Amino acid sequence: MNKPLKRHESLKPLSRDHHHGLLLCWKIREDLKRNIPHERIKRYTDFFFTSQLRPHFKFEEEEIFPLLGEHHPMSVRAIKEHARLESLFKMEADAETFNSIEKELNRHIRFEERELFKELQETIPEEKLRNITNKEEEIITPDPDDWDDKFWQKK
Ligand SMILES: [Fe+2]
Ligand SMILES: [Fe+2]
Image (cartoon, rainbow, N blue to C red):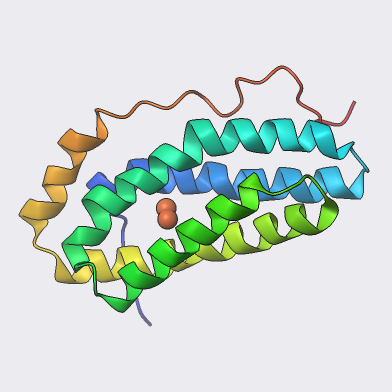
Protein backbone atom coordinates (compact mmCIF):
# COMPACT_ATOMS: atom_id res chain seq x y z
CA MET A 1 0.00 0.00 0.00
CA ASN A 2 1.23 3.48 -0.81
CA LYS A 3 1.82 5.55 2.25
CA PRO A 4 0.16 8.95 1.85
CA LEU A 5 2.75 11.63 1.34
CA LYS A 6 3.17 13.92 4.31
CA ARG A 7 2.67 17.55 3.40
CA HIS A 8 5.96 19.45 3.44
CA GLU A 9 6.16 22.08 6.20
CA SER A 10 6.58 24.87 3.63
CA LEU A 11 3.39 23.95 1.83
CA LYS A 12 1.25 23.73 4.95
CA PRO A 13 0.06 27.38 4.93
CA LEU A 14 -1.10 26.89 1.36
CA SER A 15 -2.88 23.69 2.36
CA ARG A 16 -4.59 25.65 5.11
CA ASP A 17 -5.79 28.14 2.50
CA HIS A 18 -7.06 25.18 0.49
CA HIS A 19 -9.00 24.00 3.49
CA HIS A 20 -10.67 27.43 3.70
CA GLY A 21 -11.40 27.25 -0.03
CA LEU A 22 -13.14 23.88 0.42
CA LEU A 23 -15.13 25.44 3.26
CA LEU A 24 -16.21 28.21 0.90
CA CYS A 25 -17.49 25.53 -1.50
CA TRP A 26 -19.41 23.94 1.34
CA LYS A 27 -20.89 27.34 2.33
CA ILE A 28 -22.02 27.95 -1.25
CA ARG A 29 -23.67 24.53 -1.44
CA GLU A 30 -25.50 25.10 1.85
CA ASP A 31 -26.59 28.61 0.89
CA LEU A 32 -28.02 27.51 -2.42
CA LYS A 33 -29.92 24.70 -0.72
CA ARG A 34 -31.41 27.14 1.75
CA ASN A 35 -32.23 29.81 -0.82
CA ILE A 36 -30.08 32.51 0.70
CA PRO A 37 -30.46 35.67 -1.44
CA HIS A 38 -27.77 35.70 -4.09
CA GLU A 39 -26.57 39.21 -3.20
CA ARG A 40 -25.64 38.02 0.26
CA ILE A 41 -23.64 35.11 -1.09
CA LYS A 42 -22.02 37.38 -3.65
CA ARG A 43 -20.88 39.87 -1.00
CA TYR A 44 -19.10 37.04 0.76
CA THR A 45 -17.60 35.46 -2.35
CA ASP A 46 -16.30 38.94 -3.34
CA PHE A 47 -14.72 39.34 0.08
CA PHE A 48 -13.28 35.83 -0.09
CA PHE A 49 -11.85 36.30 -3.55
CA THR A 50 -10.20 39.64 -2.79
CA SER A 51 -8.87 38.82 0.66
CA GLN A 52 -8.01 35.12 0.30
CA LEU A 53 -7.91 33.77 -3.20
CA ARG A 54 -6.27 36.60 -5.09
CA PRO A 55 -3.20 36.73 -2.81
CA HIS A 56 -3.11 32.92 -2.74
CA PHE A 57 -3.17 32.66 -6.54
CA LYS A 58 -0.54 35.37 -6.84
CA PHE A 59 1.73 33.59 -4.40
CA GLU A 60 1.38 30.29 -6.20
CA GLU A 61 2.04 31.89 -9.56
CA GLU A 62 5.10 33.80 -8.37
CA GLU A 63 6.69 31.35 -5.95
CA ILE A 64 5.30 27.86 -6.45
CA PHE A 65 4.65 27.11 -10.10
CA PRO A 66 8.02 28.54 -11.24
CA LEU A 67 9.65 25.76 -9.21
CA LEU A 68 8.13 23.28 -11.62
CA GLY A 69 8.67 25.60 -14.57
CA GLU A 70 6.13 27.70 -16.42
CA HIS A 71 5.81 25.13 -19.20
CA HIS A 72 5.21 22.19 -16.91
CA PRO A 73 1.72 20.83 -17.78
CA MET A 74 0.62 21.14 -14.15
CA SER A 75 1.69 24.80 -13.98
CA VAL A 76 -0.04 25.50 -17.27
CA ARG A 77 -3.23 23.86 -16.04
CA ALA A 78 -3.18 25.63 -12.66
CA ILE A 79 -2.60 29.08 -14.18
CA LYS A 80 -5.41 28.52 -16.66
CA GLU A 81 -7.74 27.49 -13.83
CA HIS A 82 -6.81 30.58 -11.81
CA ALA A 83 -7.83 32.80 -14.72
CA ARG A 84 -11.06 30.88 -15.19
CA LEU A 85 -11.89 31.09 -11.47
CA GLU A 86 -11.14 34.80 -11.39
CA SER A 87 -13.59 35.39 -14.23
CA LEU A 88 -16.23 33.28 -12.45
CA PHE A 89 -15.87 35.31 -9.25
CA LYS A 90 -16.37 38.47 -11.27
CA MET A 91 -19.54 37.23 -12.92
CA GLU A 92 -23.10 38.10 -11.96
CA ALA A 93 -24.55 36.59 -8.84
CA ASP A 94 -26.75 33.75 -10.03
CA ALA A 95 -27.14 30.10 -9.09
CA GLU A 96 -25.36 28.88 -12.21
CA THR A 97 -22.28 30.98 -11.48
CA PHE A 98 -22.18 29.89 -7.82
CA ASN A 99 -22.49 26.27 -8.90
CA SER A 100 -19.58 26.66 -11.28
CA ILE A 101 -17.44 28.35 -8.63
CA GLU A 102 -18.24 25.57 -6.19
CA LYS A 103 -17.45 22.80 -8.67
CA GLU A 104 -14.37 24.32 -10.25
CA LEU A 105 -12.76 25.63 -7.07
CA ASN A 106 -13.21 22.21 -5.49
CA ARG A 107 -11.60 20.51 -8.46
CA HIS A 108 -8.76 23.01 -8.63
CA ILE A 109 -7.88 22.59 -4.95
CA ARG A 110 -7.98 18.81 -5.17
CA PHE A 111 -5.76 18.91 -8.23
CA GLU A 112 -3.16 21.06 -6.46
CA GLU A 113 -3.26 19.01 -3.28
CA ARG A 114 -3.20 15.57 -4.87
CA GLU A 115 -1.14 16.15 -7.99
CA LEU A 116 0.74 19.43 -8.11
CA PHE A 117 1.95 19.51 -4.50
CA LYS A 118 2.82 15.84 -4.73
CA GLU A 119 4.89 16.51 -7.85
CA LEU A 120 6.62 19.42 -6.08
CA GLN A 121 7.53 17.33 -3.08
CA GLU A 122 8.83 14.51 -5.22
CA THR A 123 10.87 16.54 -7.68
CA ILE A 124 12.00 19.80 -6.05
CA PRO A 125 15.04 19.77 -3.75
CA GLU A 126 14.27 20.17 -0.08
CA GLU A 127 16.33 23.33 0.13
CA LYS A 128 14.19 25.11 -2.43
CA LEU A 129 11.01 24.03 -0.71
CA ARG A 130 12.29 25.39 2.57
CA ASN A 131 12.88 28.73 0.92
CA ILE A 132 9.16 29.15 0.31
CA THR A 133 8.46 29.65 4.01
CA ASN A 134 10.28 32.97 4.30
CA LYS A 135 8.32 34.42 1.43
CA GLU A 136 5.03 33.19 2.81
CA GLU A 137 5.45 35.24 5.94
CA GLU A 138 5.16 38.36 3.84
CA ILE A 139 1.56 37.72 2.90
CA ILE A 140 -0.95 37.91 5.68
CA THR A 141 -4.59 37.46 4.80
CA PRO A 142 -7.47 38.21 7.17
CA ASP A 143 -9.45 35.41 8.75
CA PRO A 144 -12.10 34.29 6.22
CA ASP A 145 -14.57 33.96 9.08
CA ASP A 146 -14.13 37.59 10.08
CA TRP A 147 -17.45 38.43 8.48
CA ASP A 148 -20.61 39.74 10.15
CA ASP A 149 -23.21 38.20 7.86
CA LYS A 150 -22.60 34.48 8.54
CA PHE A 151 -25.63 33.31 6.59
CA TRP A 152 -24.31 29.74 6.29
CA GLN A 153 -24.82 29.20 10.02
CA LYS A 154 -28.18 27.70 10.79
CA LYS A 155 -30.17 29.79 13.20
FE1 LIG B 1 -4.16 27.44 -7.27
FE1 LIG C 1 -3.87 26.75 -4.33
